Length: 454
Ligand SMILES: Cc1ncc(COP(=O)(O)O)c(C=O)c1O
Image (cartoon, rainbow, N blue to C red; front, side, top):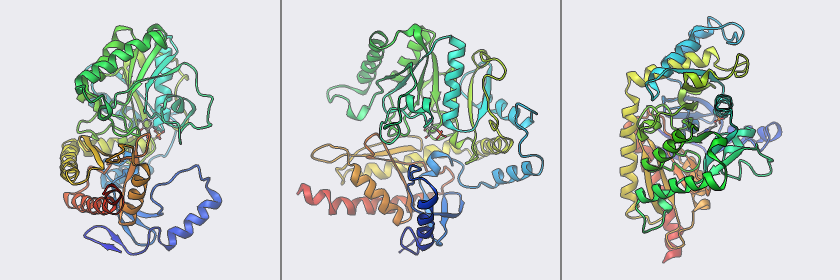
């Protein structure tokens, strides 16, 4: 039982009602639909989730980074309700509606790049990636697409093909889409010990240059797609020189640069879009997740002349840019601007970083504490073997959930704790969650690794 100011755990997790529903789920929902927190939700507000057993949990996962404005912000709920009273869906391809237009206009205003931009609205991150690739191919007349090691771009065939984590995303799901190539993405923590971060970034750029001789010729490439900060891959923050180096090579060879900002967008990194940190102006940007506080909507935005390459009917879909998603997104962006949530992202990040940099001094399993804005992560390596602590991390997130904090891991070895807390989380809530995390990490370290290292 845990009762603190915000978190309230009165049953085992999962509680009896969740347990009953989990049994039913086993009958009707395939096990391939993964799940982290074994609870069923009754309601959610801000950074808190109430489960069907009356437990209240703190949400440090934000539906995998979908809820930068938190659960059910009043402005968003009101906008959706008002829209429901007008029309739910007319399909933009059949009868157009203004919220689609208003959102495209707003996105053009808040994204990097002072040039003419156009936007197509879709349903999910993977669908945005698919369409960005279609548009890039149509515009360039080339087919090749380069993504990066440890990158994640979704679970559709093309998304999987561009993704670079085999289990669970690709294993036995091939063959994958042709003309997709993987280049090396830096992993600063694991760089050679005698190399500075900057020299390492330059080395990775030179590897990319080689790659254009060993794997695919630049004139065969339509686009490079990059997460400016890798999400699923473990919140890997590349050096600015790397991102700019790749961007400049793209410019030199007329290869389009697609920034996949599905996870990094909408304030997560302490800028509205992570591309800004690297001083780049992507040709195309894919976005989704925190765009609309949980309404399923995504976008591909890009330079007008590129976006206009496909002819009418070549891109789109029945539900793309649903009116409910559009009004939710407009309310989200307005709220972010009014409440300065981008600044708040930086404050949250500083608090998380400070907390774990202090803890790192007494816990040698914390190999690195890294972050850009509130996109923070902790990488756990065994102090003597330096091996990724996958089982430990998964036991830790399980116990954390039992104590009322929902947290996700990341990384190809599952040994990274990633923060995707709503940016509306209060200081008090954050402190409460961090306190639980600290105590649990210390006690698990002492009862496992510390005894074995002694
Ligand atoms: C960078 C990135 N691209 C694409 C996707 C796929 O988005 P979706 O799950 O909405 O298809 C994700 C999802 O985590 C992502 O993080």
